[in-house]
Amino acid sequence: MPTADRIVVIGGGITGVAAAHRLVTLTSGTDTEIVLLEAEERLGGKIRTSRFGASLIDESADAFLLRTPHAVQLASSVGLGEQLVSPTSASAGIWAGKLYPIPSDLALGVPTSLTAVARSGLLPTTALARAALDLVRPRSSIDHDSIGEWARSRFGYHVHDRLIDALVGSIYGADTDRFSLQAVPQLHSLSQAGRSALISGRKLRKVASPQGGPIFGAPPLGMEQLIHSTVAALQQHGEERARVISGSPCRSLQQTNTGWVVNDIEADGVIVATPAHHASRLFDGDLRTALGSFDTSDVAIVTVRVTANEWPEHLQNRSGYLIPKSQQRLVTAVSFASQKWSHLAQEDGSQILRISLGRDALPIDRLSDADLVNHAIEETSQQLGIHINHAETRVSRWTHAFTQYRPHHAERVAAIDGLLPRHLQLAGSSYRGIGIPACIADGTRAAEELLASMAN
Ligand SMILES: Cc1cc2nc3c(=O)[nH]c(=O)nc-3n(C[C@H](O)[C@H](O)[C@H](O)COP(=O)(O)OP(=O)(O)OC[C@H]3O[C@@H](n4cnc5c(N)ncnc54)[C@H](O)[C@@H]3O)c2cc1C
Image (cartoon, helix red, strand yellow):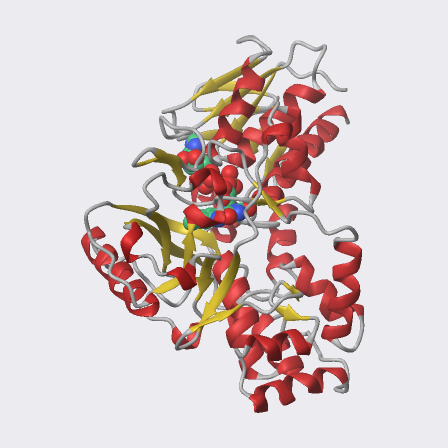
């Protein structure tokens, strides 16, 4: 491994923390100092867990995918591997005038069995007939790189609206008509694997999950535990090897003849692990313009408590539900946290609900916290036919939460990579994946590529 005196990582969200962890590991046995610089007093960025009543409830991400290795590997290497918990067997629903069970055997919203979709009752018969045309239609062009266009060309309007857009849109805070197919690997492979998306989805499901097992996992004290454990693992290397400086925004990033100066810290290499719109402010010229040009969407999560006597029996085996775009006002999804996670079941039988509002083309930034609570409670009460009181509520606002991967996003990222100066890497949720495993993978990649470039 190359030796360097100091490497600075800017941004203490999961990407930056994972990058710093990888750098410390790869430079073990050297004197290289890794400095992690975070603007806020609190580390974690968009990962935040806080108390709601007696329970620790996530204010944003509450689970990560187990079937891609990066989050599980990081959790294991910082001592959380054995502790990870998975959701209960409660199942999710779709709200379309009433609550329908989500069809089984979906691959990110893409049906792999029309019988399962028919059984759910979610689609009218004409829509099922249209969806079946996927089996005989010629391969779809994907030059447009839009999830919406591709999904409708295969299955028609209803499958796109009620399943694919509902699922993918809620993960990415997106309007899938304006979201890159190529940027969502599971859907992109389906579009490439064969003529029929349904048949390809069936094959890919078998490969992705040969023995079943849980799809999602999380640390038992909430997602912020992954941040704390990773930072603790960093700090075990001692102050000389790993320094974490929070409450210290990077305001200036200057390239010198020999390396970089970050604020007043000299460094041999830098990883900028902030969202692109923050990163853009650190650069000039084309790089600044390119990084500043990504659209983002704002979301909020309103957490509420529903008393036990208000909670109807027919909701007791449910983990929550999604609301398709055609049915949305401001609420896009509702998670029944105390039924989704067994450790969050409440002693008094009350239910904690996490209600998501807003996405691309469904702005919420003009609303006050009180408005958000009112909308969340009114829409959810109406959908579930229950009374939710205002006694215990919490609003978590996530401005610029999700970079929108517009069609041909990958080409924009490649162009940005081509503009990067020497010994500097960009990483994070704006570029190669939004989910926690993808952010960890990107932080790890940035660490490895930076060290490799410094060795040359
Ligand atoms: C509501 C919501 C729900 C989500 N749910 C899930 C989920 O269930 N599963 C999942 O896998 N993913 C989920 N995600 C996505 C995932 O949580 C994020 O994509 C990921 O946490 C982003 O991490 P990051 O480190 O790239 O960016 P961030 O978390 O934004 O971290 C960047 C950090 O950089 C800091 N910073 C910015 N500018 C500077 C500067 N100049 N100097 C120093 N520091 C700076 C910021 O303060 C911040 O701490 C969700 C996201 C949201 C918002």
